[in-house]
Image 1 (cartoon, helix red, strand yellow):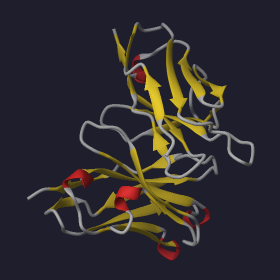
Image 2 (spheres, rainbow over the protein chains, first blue to last red):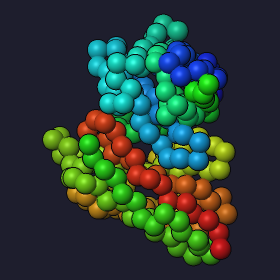
Image 3 (cartoon, rainbow over the protein chains, first blue to last red):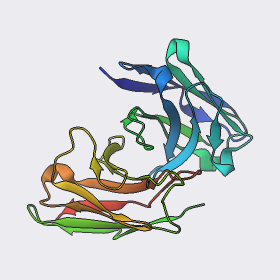
Image 4 (cartoon, rainbow over the protein chains, first blue to last red):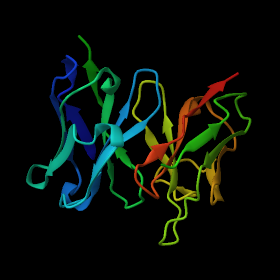
Length: 119
Length: 112
């Protein structure tokens, strides 16, 4: 079965750090661009970061640049998001998403992991 | 950044009747390679988003043919020919022509 499974979410204080992981299975992970997309409680979707197959290209939302780092381990079919200097406005469900069809969109999504930044 | 504006915010629809959602971008979504990277996603309550349409009008695998996309340049439309109960949720347009990738604010489709 083709799937993405996120983990690592939780409650963290402002200024703290968290590392999210996404385990891919059922497809050749190393062939595809992968991304993180977030959704604040009751809110809409917001793109966070994207990287290409070999990690030579990475793109970030301006508000997370310098604080978040996207990375991948193709040998383990795993995507990560290191989040530092967390702010209340980073509170959201974080989805791992991929573009398997080269459609320049997201054709596969995980179930999401909740990150809450609060004192 | 490209701003994506969706209307309406909410669309109460009678079962079996059509629904239409509009999405307008603040600049053309035509990429330098000639393609237009506008897609539509559906998010059912309590679920992650799901891809419906890519590159304006191409239905993703398994998407019923009652969903169709159209448009060009800066104006795009998603139509549901006959709304079913399973279609309740929030619909988002998204552009991937340039970074940062941006989404519309979402349109909630509900049954009257």
